[in-house]
Image 1 (cartoon, chains in turn orange, yellow):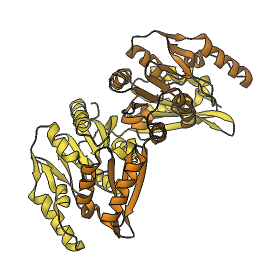
Image 2 (image 1 turned 45 degrees about the horizontal axis):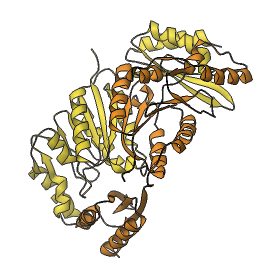
Image 3 (image 1 turned 60 degrees about the vertical axis):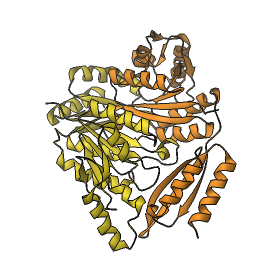
Image 4 (image 1 turned 90 degrees about the vertical axis):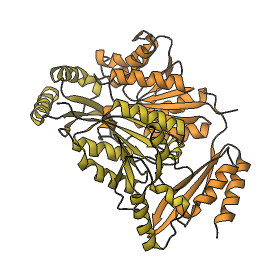
Length: 240
Length: 240
């Protein structure tokens, strides 16, 4: 059976303007691969209502799961929650359980649960909260969309909360072979290998080291024995 | 007048599987900001014909420029060129000028210009070549789509070749202010500031340092005087 599919939606002007180097995509890609969920597409959009709604609708329709990062803080540029709700015609308001989490937290820090901070307790009707052990303000799951914070430490703990609740498939296994020849020399061999192993994904990534061209060939698949067999055959054919 | 708009399309299984951490998005975002072209959306898709064609068509329709990275090497998993051509119903074949570049290069290295390497000379009809001073195999521009390599060193030189040929707008200027207060405390001030300066983009990015919450506020805009005025007012209102 095919693995469940997923897409990621990164939301934030700071990524598109070049201010911030996104690290959540790489993190999520690795975690999903381990969990047997195939990450098929990522989109990055700005803090713009129309862009967020269009992207989340398209991705929610196209894939089993959507993971979003960014835009759920207390400031005016945090507009993710209301636009996820709007995309699915769902009302959104401050919810008691989310407010209670924040109230308890600010009680310990001495800060005031003011109107701005209360924005972080707005949860679309019918959503499930996602734990935030780092800074308390929760994410949420609405339908097949998991809405998480952009700050990497928070994003990562939220992913860790959500993933065990999702049915994964077979983890993607991979092996790689480093070949000290230009990829143009091994292209025919790889092409034949890919044709003979249609269930495997075979990628070739060139590099240059001390002036010599080489290629890393990565063989990915869910059947360990098949991955082994393909890598063994490749090693025999190109080497050595 | 509004700046030209752009989107980026990153093509490659290795990004979505978590093997490779993309760095081209961050690089391109920074270069476009300097050049006065607004990066509005990024998509990452796998080495899949349908996904590449759908994404490039959508982005080419929606934005002034599209920059792609990845999938133009000599191996079986390099399928970007033919799918960009297919997306625009344009024939593609080995072109003499591109072949000549490769032939001259391989003459110096002693390698053979075999069939696999000749794949890198396939250029859609009517496209313009993009220089590759690093490893010679060219990129190309077809319509408003600039097709470039995924290897960062090559991608970066290709961006450097293309950008001067495009009409830029006003470079995006930015100033930031580091405020040692939780973003929930300054949210009202920022919200009012954003309302009073509708032409500026004002972002707030929380951090935690030595257990204290702070926020970096980034003010972006094309009018330096306006950016200055907003930052000065913010500093006065939150501090200090």
